[in-house]
View 1 (tube, protein in one colour):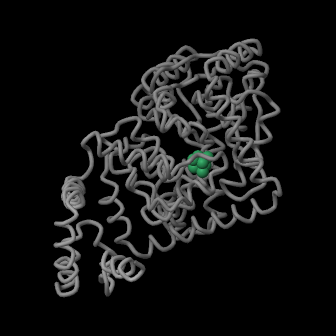
View 2: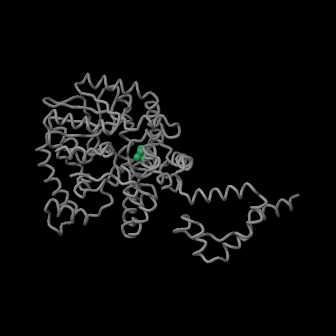
View 3: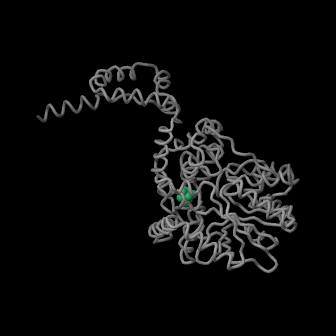
Length: 464
Ligand code: SF4
């Protein structure tokens, strides 16, 4: 069952559609803020939290600036452990490799644990078009798969849905009673359905949270054990790993494991943290190391630090824009602040609205466990978007007028009293319309009793 490719969206328009349902906006915001607060509590329990973040950031920056040699080391060590390694330049190569491996093994039933990379590559529809039955086994992923929707959050794919939505979905696809909305009963129904699919699978596909260059092993973190069950049962295991997931040594791993779950959900650890250091007896394990735009991002001086991201989702949970506009409004695999930094690198024209989907309050940067300077990168993209001619024409015109005005101080001074008077006397509807998009949903402020210029001149006259 495939999921649609995400359409290219104007974020503001899509967000307006989301917030038109005030109830939904309210509980979506509250659910994510609750997780943000759990994160704060969990973080407060770790006295060396700030030192951990700094250390993790330094490890990632070191790895990214020596990425080629760590990738080669990882490949060498993984091969020595009996893991087979492939390289994919882009999504097309990745998907073709997965299909070839499945075809060579005669596999037609694939169970998949959560992997944002395979979402990014649109693997499900690619395989389904070639006769492979793909089942997402993470509960949230399974729910959105049944609904033929993309995930709306990188850690909680179905956070945009309420239990009644899930009940209706399961009633339609799994035959549960129409009135069933109890989360425990719904989870049991999903488990019973998935168990049979696990047992029947010919192959399993997982992502990886970390891949260790020193050992050639990789680590998969889940809360449901679905990746582990797939890995334990299927004779063929394919792991799709973005090249930025490499860390140098096994000693570095605990630094990230302490940060990841606390930042993501407020848990001290994920429930399952599985290490793969070679195939079990009778099993074949293939690793696909995927670039798909990552080296291009690494080459961008203003944005390479976004590759430090460990996909914890904390920046999404805290972002006032994401919480109130929902993940689908971004039209990208990874939504929220980190998605808005990554997506323009793939296609600037298509994602030109995303760097503006931020208040630049810096809350994302404040919670990021690996010190990705998200607000600074969003600001830099804004400049690049405008420079490339993709900014909104209204903003461009307004900026041009303001530039002209500010370059002529005498004219600006002459016009200021007129503008101040206009703001006072014109009806609110008119001033709101004149302020463009900014005035929508905001109260256009009244000018102060005295202009700053007049205030300043009065003071300097007085002091001299
Ligand atoms: S940018 Fe930072 S906070 Fe956001 S998902 Fe990545 S690691 Fe987490």
